Amino acid sequence: MKNQSFYFVLFLFFSVHLTCAFFKSDCRKNNFCPVTFMRGTGYAIDADERSLETRVPVNSKILILTDMNGKIQNANGPYGNLFTKVVWEGRELFLHSSDLSYHKKIRVIATMGVQISEKPELNSKILGTLNYNTSVKIVSETDPDRKPNSFVKVTDDQISGWALGKNFTNEDYDVEFYKRL
Image 1 (cartoon, rainbow, N blue to C red):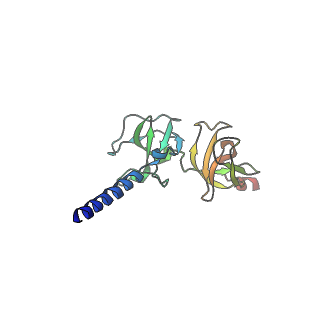
Image 2 (image 1 turned 120 degrees about the vertical axis):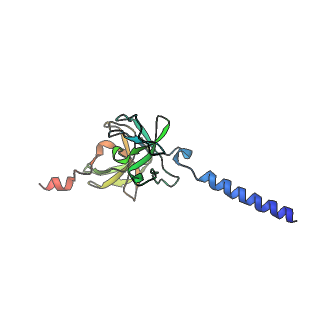
Image 3 (image 1 turned 180 degrees about the vertical axis):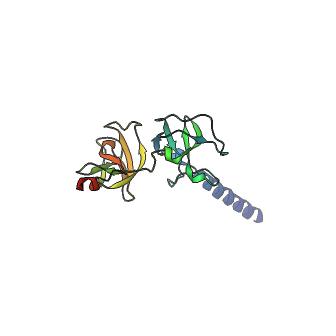
């Protein structure tokens, strides 16, 4: 009986350990990593915080690595929060956060508001509407040049979804302020 109890406890321990290890992963596990594009100089560091000689070119497609809850993974060390963990051309590295459009603020410029869709498709299910001049954060993108029919995934902490990028402007331009002048 003691042997059975021992093996049962051992079994439970390994089951829980393996289950926890199974769930502790990043966004690649479920293929839901945010996509963004390089906007800045492409300064990168490796996991050991060594500067890389190679610069990531502007408009390069970047996968932002988040944990399973969508939280950004940053580098360690005193300046870690300045560097976001990403995948570029199959290589894990850290890019300076200011060079990425991920989580940058933009505003709704369409006076009729913007419909937010479930998928980056014109006929996708509508999740809701963002009003004119609403400030949102970029979560993901489909095109580096933000062509008129490219989509951008945004969130305002109440709703998240896809909309046409042409309906937004960067946050520095407050349309309500300029409308009054």
